[in-house]
Length: 348
Length: 220
Image (cartoon, rainbow over all chains, first blue to last red; front, side, top):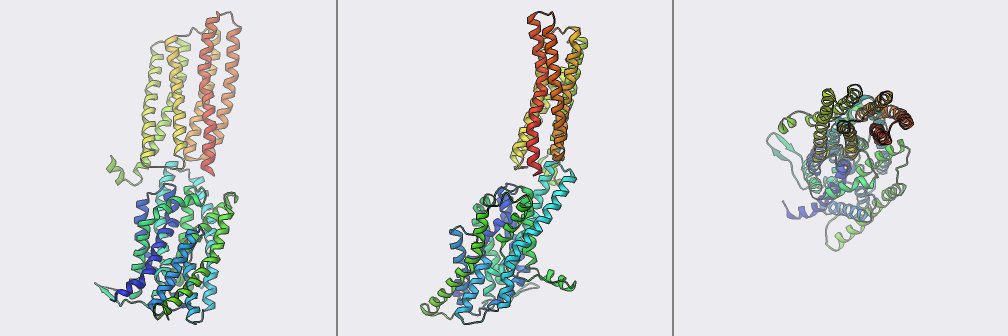
């Protein structure tokens, strides 16, 4: 394999690392922050299930990104992922809520603009509408689940210690599911742009065949896992504080709602089932894990009288929604110009 | 034991649950023993039967102390119930103090052997009964805090009612003692015992107030 391939893939791996270090906190942050789950346990479970989700269910959302812009050469894919990664980095540094999903979409549109490729407005509208739908859906699910769990706990008369033990177990299971859903949904952001230009050929291991896309998913999953292992601890410890004080019950509901939403936007199985039932399907689109979890927390806060909501933080999130894709689009456009004219690379 | 706990699903949880229940059982039992101890003294003086009750309260208090330490260690070593840990420890320590008050009152009776005139014995008996009812309502409130915190308010209300009644009885008893023809030193001695017994109800009310806050925190 040409070593330059690794250089070109590096921007995707960097994006994967950033995603792992930041978004693992959405899955396990509240559990670790409230000291219900140890960080080491959370990191191991998160890494395993992120990779599983990426390898098993990563194709659906990646396919949609591919339709938005099929980047067929590696240098183009490199700059798209790099633009997204730089945007994520800059936004995180300035303390604004950031979504890798929105960054990568901005990057792809930047590539489309540079290469004079038309952007499929129907796909773009679908993607943007899911960005609104994702936190709203997460809030609705959280409200329903919170009400149900509250009602159950009131009538079950469980001992305080037992409730705590069940919640710990629940946070681990919900976290594993959340990590799987994160891998399935967000792997598209990390390696999705590389799929049409994938440098890998099919790999036979025993009776299994790994397609070039699956190999990319596994490498991307590994990058996310490295991010979780190396950098997520601090983010996890602070995430509870940034969202305001949150009870372990609310933490559990937030994680499970986030996971259901991410899974719904990634699962081909669910799509097929909804189709077979004659129901409208949910588009398979990479959505923001942070916005899903914030949506759930806001939903629970509204249920409790909206006293705990920090409206300034919410304002920052909305600002991030608008700023991230625009910034990624601009960085990608200018980056491609340099890559083409200064480094002499074919970018489309 | 540790390995067995790992093999049993929720083994540690079950053990901790039963340790907390056992602690509350000890408190409940010592309440009964305290009442029987005072009654025995009023009826028969500091005889062998009274000593048995005093010893029972002592034993229950030190067993409860041991359980409190185990519970504290378990909660902190395994970072259990992180959001309610401080409240649970505070509650258990405050409940433990109820037993210390029982022990203190019975020891004082055993050492000082107050000479209670026949006409005031009914007052002491009534006061002890009311104080014990306040403590029993507190134990029920504490049990309820662990399983159904929304019901804590009902028991707390009872604690308040019994405490108020105990206050009325103790005031009347002290008035009766000081209106009598006893020597001042004896009056002061008897007043000391009225206050020592009444202290249990006052303390129960203080703990119930804190329990109310802990319960609100759990139900929000």
